[in-house]
Image (cartoon, rainbow, N blue to C red; front, side, top):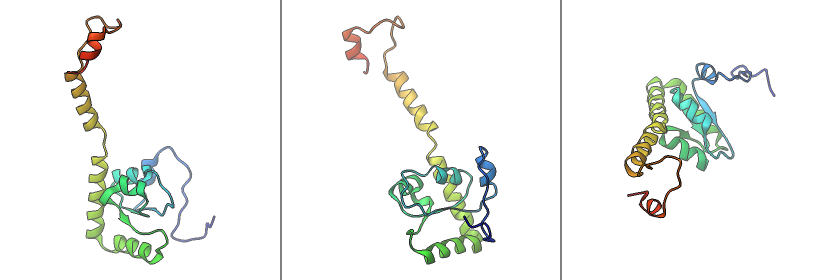
Length: 142
């Protein structure tokens, strides 16, 4: 592990990830394989743009909110990072898109819809805890 690179800083493990994201201006994910992108979602929820290798998991997770650069395209990575660093308007736009994407991934609205559907569709039992009759099982969902 190189510790003498002037523009690279290692941060000790912490359970306070928001404190780490407060110090970051971009998250890079040159992952060779990524099934999802929890780190990307956490960064986006803090308004931090993500530059990532277009793995299927990261594309599904980030959608159009990330800037995608193939893992082996060094010039592409440099260009993407340089544009984010030097073009404030572009950075702000990518930050806004990141926040919007993180909000779109919030499960609370969908969970509320499922809860409403269940409450309006499931027939309540007359005696909680008793086994359902065969007719009730058939009629459980209208």
